Structure formats: C-alpha cells, structure tokens
Length: 160
Image (tube, rainbow, N blue to C red; front, side, top):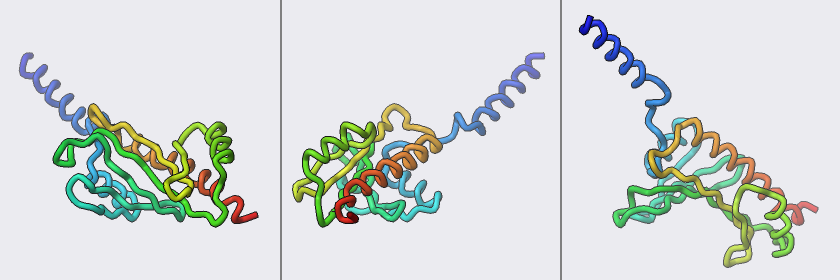
C-alpha cells in the first residue's frame, strides 16, 4: 500500500512537471525573450554589449526596442523590460495634442523626446519568477495595439 501511494505521488509529480504551470516562465533575459520572439516568427536581433544589451524587433510595420531594466552590475538578473519606440512625423504633434492623447488612452506612456519626436513606451514587470509565455505574448500583442494606435495619432497630420 505504501508503494502504491508513492507511485501515485511520483505520477502526480510527473504530470505537474508536464503541465503548463510548470513551464518555464519568461523573465527579463534578453536572450530568452529574443529566442521566444524568433520561435513565434518575429525578427529579433540582440544588439549592444554587456549591460547595454537590448532587442531590436518589430511588428505591424514598425520597429521597436525591448530594453531590460533593474539589472545587476553585470547586466543580468534584470527585473523588468520596456517596449519602446519613437516616430518621426513631418508635422509633429504639439504638447497639447500629446496631453489630450495621454488623457484619452490608458496604456502606454507617451512623451516628446529630445528631438520633439513622439515616443511611447510600456513596461512589463517580470520580477519574482516572471510570467507565462502566453501572458508575455498577450502583453506583446497588447503593445502592438497600443503602438499602432499611437503611430496613427503621431502621423495623423502628415496624412491630412
């Protein structure tokens, strides 16, 4: 009877290891994220060296960066990543237009960068074990919607 109970525990443990709950979570590791993106069919290139490594990728016709944050002195052990891009419209939005857009749109932090180009970023917290692959990809698709909406806003006057 003890042997049978132990066998059940071993089988249950084996099933847990194969379950989605036991799958390796996505953490703020540049190589892991780049490999995931490539496996999902995205172009993803790791750029930079040491603590300045980041990913250049794109979707919906726009390029963006995935930047690791809150890393240790060696540039690893990071706690979060940021999706970032800036646009260069011919007729740039005013600060008032940017403020109105920010007030009407909940996700994505926007601002005018040092060249007064409209920029947008979105942070993803991957601390304390990261998140499932599915949730990370869901956040990535959400970023796509936020980024495309902001691009349409940024280039609106160019298209009028």
